[in-house]
Amino acid sequence: MSVNCSLWQENSLSVKYFVFAKFSEVLGECFLLFTLILLMFLVSLTGNALITFAICISSALHTPMYFFLANLSLLEIGYTCSVIPTMLQSLVSEVREISWEGCATQMFFFSYFGITECCILAAMALDRYVAICSLFHYATQMGRGVCAHLAIVSWGMGSIVELGQTNFIFFLDFCGPCEIDHFFCDLPPVLALAWGATSQNEAAIFVVTILCISSPLLFIIYSYVRILVAVLVMPSPEGRHKALSTCSSHLLVVTLFYGSGSITYLKPKSSHLPEMNKLLALFYTAVTPMLNPIIYSLRNKEVKGALRRTLGLKKVLIISN
Image (cartoon, rainbow, N blue to C red; front, top):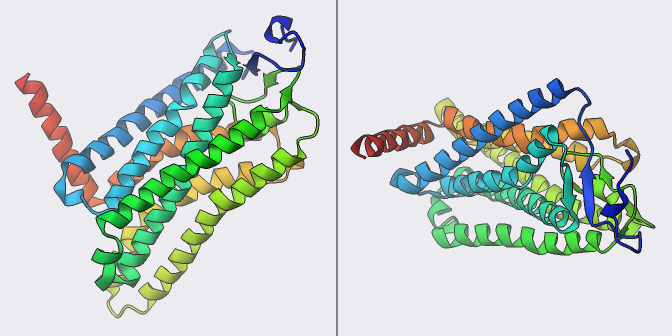
């Protein structure tokens, strides 16, 4: 694709705009994908908003597990809103440009919500570990103050890390072509456009990945190994089933989130395939956030009950108005 020179600054070393690559020359394929992503986006927003609202208004759900679930749902809303609107626009519009500042902002929020979600998922694993392996101390070890501190650290860590990483990347020089072979400003495709040596940036991204993505995953695995050991020694089959059922939704969400993300960010640079990266990006930005509220609502009786009461309350309010 030829890049318009007006996109460049006068020194020809830094671009003022990036351009997203066109998904397909076939208009029907673009509109089909647009429709599918829009539907998933709307389902994701609706589902996560309903779960957050249901947890807030239902006193029965004011427990650590559901406190973290509400945080997770808020994260999913921010996560999808940071990339899906741009993705939808680039699919059906000839205007596929994003400013330098806009690209940096999008990258910050996308990565920020992603890192924070890793931390929240680890906090949810800690909650399940304490509930099953240290039940008699659960009230003190997972009190409101502890949960609030875990949430604050999770949200704060993501912002600090991503402020540094985004600045580190966008202080690089970018020269033509300024076409991003992706749907949004993700780290690998943007870094591929940088001029000069980028080995330090790639090393920094790898370190952030290990510390902020892999470390929470290792903690989750460790927690569930301990949980499994504790469950296996339980004398009652009913007790074992109940303990495992409280963990199943979280385990499934972790698998979906980390499965696609790990393939994208932990694989060697030489094996990066743009088309595969786009497919994985669709999965972890559109499919996974849509599935999470469905998983928790279908597999959890308390959440289903709270959602029914929430929907019933909305109907009453609509009728009364």
